[in-house]
Image (cartoon, rainbow, N blue to C red; front, side, top):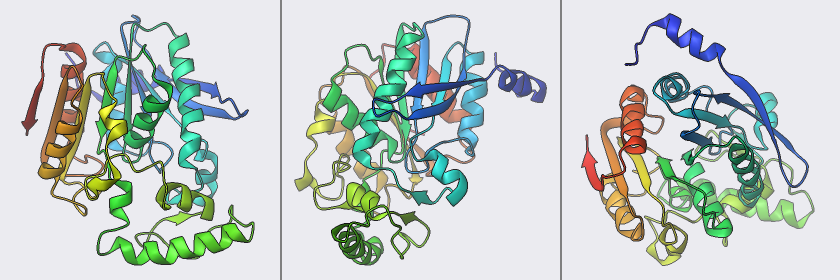
Length: 305
């Protein structure tokens, strides 16, 4: 059984391998791999707007406990990660549509390792990325999905606070793109903290954004990509998750999500009381519930903890 002994944590981290995946457009992406001796299960994590998860508590818990308890773990980086090293974690230049190429590369790399079951996990914007990838690529050799805060990206810029920034930034982004300056940063911050390039803003939040996946706030945008999922899904959120509650009460949002996952052979939705977007203080429960789902193929339930 897992122990919180610091020496065990350090031993596990010492087993980390720096790995790389090559995208179809010639980019080399980095990642961190923590393996078990067997080739039964591996969890591939795709990050959201932050580009990586290395500074989050659940990354440390996952990189330690998953391999200790029989599941390998690969934490990937996106194409915008190198920019974030110099510009900070609140900087975004990544185009949502390019996530298809990044996920192609990471899924191909993971497949080459020879695991029987590949689970694709993602956080924040990440669940929208992997659902969009699944809809477009239709892979058959995928064990299932793990969503960490499946956020309504369009809804978050259309609530009563986000809409103010959105109207300013979308107008500025369109003007920059029209002038051929789409790679430049918009001189306004989204939610008071995030800097985006004009191209990235239109890609994520423009009128025809492909990031409109989890449409809790605007049902007219549809759910066809979520509806296409016919693999097991484990989804996590918290009552104070600011990736969801500004748009809608999380319980109501997860009710909608559960109904839209109509073709899933197995699904479980976990709502933690009082937790936040990054699951701070809930890392142990998050990992335990994930391991339970991965190893238990008989459950099909919805719980609130």
